Length: 134
Image (cartoon, rainbow, N blue to C red):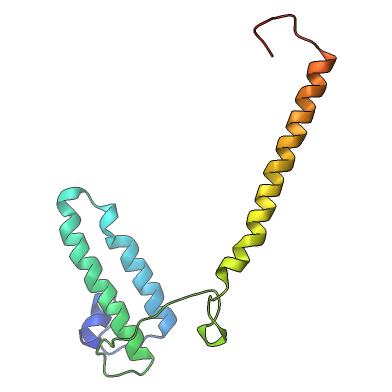
């Protein structure tokens, strides 16, 4: 897709040079209006093709604004993660989850002990005369 086609598809004038934030805002607005999940079944196919065009236009303008060419879509892939991949990426994500699991298991275990202790105390204080109740 050419850059001027992408600009028109996202609602910009043909010779306008939008900033990346303007491109992102226009993309979000167009996606909100044309997302396939918002349409009934018989209109979903048309909405899906329009949605793909809008996504392609967004990719084209983002690569164009970064200076990667004359509007041609590059084969680079943008991924987002919580940690920059330059500094090790997500090599230790399992170690991060371990303390949280210990906290959750400890809370459940201690909560269960407190509930059992409270049940026994109440049972001793108010004994039941019903043979079917514990």
